[in-house]
Image (cartoon, rainbow, N blue to C red):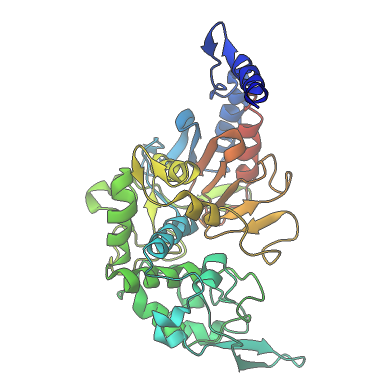
Amino acid sequence: MKTTFLLPLTALLCALTLHGQIAPAKPSALDPLRAARLDQALQGYVDDEKIAGAVALVLRDGKAVYEKAVGWADKEAGRKMTPDTIFRIASQSKAFTSTAILALVEEGKIGLTEPVSHFIPTFAKTTVAVRGSDGSVSTVPAKRQITIHDLLTHTAGISYGTDSQVASLYSPKGLGPSAGNGWYTADKDEPICETMSRLGTLPFVSQPGEAYVYGYNTDILGCVVEKASGMALDEFIRTRITGPLGLKDTRFYVPPAEKDRLAAVYASSNGKYVRSAEGSKGQGSYVEGPRKSFSGGAGLTSTARDYARFLEMIRNGGALDGTRILAPRTVALMTTNQSGMLHSNSGLGFGYGFETVDRYGASGMAGIGAFGWGGAYGSTYQVDPQSRSVLVLMIQLMPNATDIQPKFYSLVYQAIVQ
């Protein structure tokens, strides 16, 4: 018994030992010649006037192995893009709010299968808009209550209210078409829980648990955070996530003194970029707004460095530099498919806040187990545990008619050779 145990152990040590020392870990750096292709591509998008500018950041093993700022943060003002430029990250806010929810799950203040009506009473009896064969729309009662799990996976049947069958009902309530592209609330002079309570009185577009429908789910969760914690969402995220991690530039609104760090929003038009107008579908109210609505689904601003550090905490099992935000098993829930085939039947799933890669090739060269998402202003990110990598690309282009996002990922992955 003793000899049988020692022999494989000795063999293992021999395999790990080189000249009497433990063999070093795999190098983290990108191949320099291959990384140069990424340099050329990013600059090419600027030179061809497809984007005004971008910041790209890649971490491997928690260390920055690629960081590049190209083009303009604000072309008209003559401000160049820099690594500390601030971006509107829109739906990348969802990862922070999902983290906040799961932190409260860990404390026993929220249950994953708990009805959201325990926190927002208007959700006790919801309805669904159904279009008949003659084109008419009627409402029917929901078959069951919406749960926290439904909201985390976007399977509650709740859209952004711009669908034809509900848009006319949402608009008078300040939602759907009256909220920019549906998700925008930065200009609202009311707390997010008031807006979400009103949402609970409107019909949704699918029965709970029957379809993947992208919409106000995470904004509702932001209100749940407030109700369960007794803190405003911005305060909870600051004290429980961004503060402990040292993310000083991740906030719902940019301080007026730092407004010149905020990138301008542009839009794709006939193959080129043009400056977007002021307002909900353009520059937004992220500096001069009422600062009352904390949109957990789309309201945060951040930098590439801040966001990559947050993602590294997730990649590292919920802790970073001695600060633990979530338990490893909680992170596993977030980053594995919790929605079955409802999100996709092509090898992509959706966990508790992230799209997941369940089959190699479903998302380019991202490995099985990778996860990520993006934002309406064109920003995007992916975490790939197989290559020990965090990939972040920040731009401000809405709508974005370029292919910069998939090209960025491909060019990073082809530069990982060890």
